[in-house]
Length: 66
Image (tube, rainbow, N blue to C red; front, top):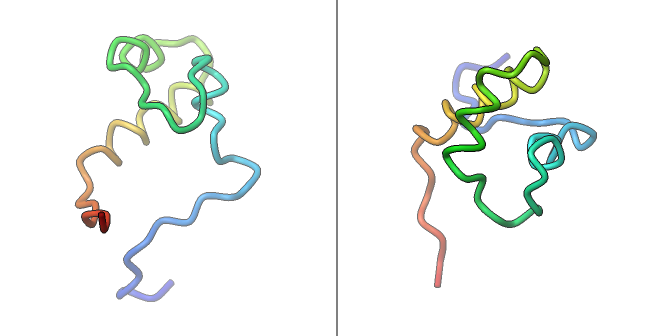
């Protein structure tokens, strides 16, 4: 894997799974309360997706053009 890689690639089949798990429509933000609850879920896959979402929220996101 090249060291200068700046993006994280998520498989198309995995995109949106956390939204489906938490019953939040795609395009809407996941509420912090639902995300916190998912972090303590008994489902390890849901916990992993929620932890990634928390970590990704701290990433530097480029500003969108208006």
